[in-house]
Length: 304
Length: 267
Image (tube, rainbow over all chains, first blue to last red; front, side, top):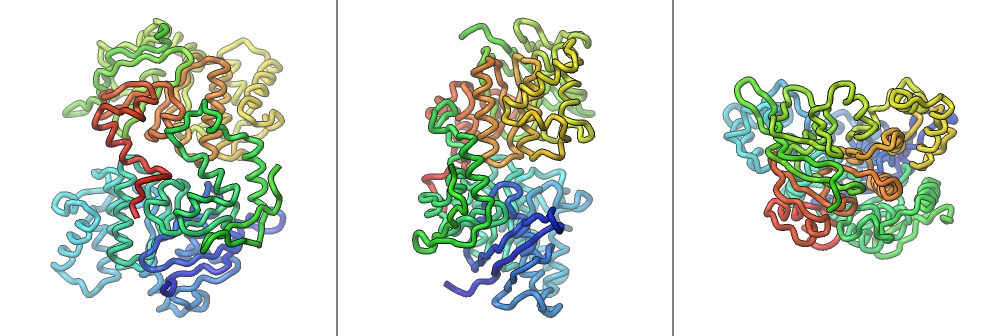
């Protein structure tokens, strides 16, 4: 495989101190490669957004290293940091809050072009905006002059994607980009991200709590629980052959129209769920490789 | 079918605008039997939440329910209730769980006080009796009764959602309206909560009007499902049939956009 663009190497983040310390991320390691997507899956509070924020340099890691193109970010020069800020872009969860309601779509796309791509000047900006909107499958003639409130959630999310693409990023961090959208437009956004990843050779970090959407977009998957990555590997293998009890629990809870709640197969026993939660919450340093590239941690404490 | 508990007839709701009105719900009729879970599915803006609000009479202007509409609960028209009757009707007969229900608890009141509030407003219960009832209800949703003295912020989102459901069920309502009750929660918690509601309705026999845009979840939970498109009910059938033999094109489209765990990978 080619060299990773972005690597989190044993990254740890804690909040608070003393007995009330919260371990939001415990020695998390993963790498992002050009043209590939990694899905970071877990429940709320599992630390997936903390990892995204560390990748965005919004949080300083408490321990561990973040490497950009092989160079550690800590101690990087300010021009390296500026370069990093350009190369890594984020798409947020809430398409309603992440666009300025007082400005048009054109404004939202002009700003990044002016700031980060000074080679595009004058009338060329207009053309660049049209190209960007066409890339995200919006009609430039209709959308350019509109304000965010005139667009639907799915359209707004497309504008957000266009804004991220305007800078020609190398890495896109998408934090639950579809969780606030209707089911009917979700796949459209995922397909678009997928195409962008392939055409522009982007590295994508896709954060979600919906493991079913991960397989539409990500080649690799990492399942997080209580700040620790408990299982990771190729998406298809992890879904077909889940090893860790928490991954199995997550998969079994995905809504499946084939199995009704009255069916005993659908029944999650709350004592078992509690055991899995308790067991998975205990830090476990050891991980075993079950298949090529498919790793899982053992439970520090076996359930039941 | 048995005599319906809830019977919505020709429900038409407009949002009155300055220049023109917007028809949010257009001539919708459906019945919900006692003990049945009826689902309304559709995209945002299709009018499903507007119906939920109308059934509990929580709609506010500019929403206007047109005259020919009827919402019958046990044969009584909800739309004709006087304010005093309405106060007795809410919670006792129809209780509602909202999407962000976990944020609808009062942050400065202990859980037990929020139970008292509902219980003493609607019944002549003594404080000791109310405490007993509250403890029973918490046990039903798998929360230890010794946490009654805690405040909402001391619970997780899923627990708060379960507390709201427990408060809803405290007065034995006949119908519980759930508008996207678990959308903000992760799948494991979602399954635990809905499974519990499914068990409870088998035990107590209340009906549920369940609203979500997640069709897969809906088929798992509901007995019958209505599919809404732009204010109209375009298809209504048993849950199994909606899944196996959808007849309306829109239903088929909804299914094809549903992310599934197996088959049809896009990579």
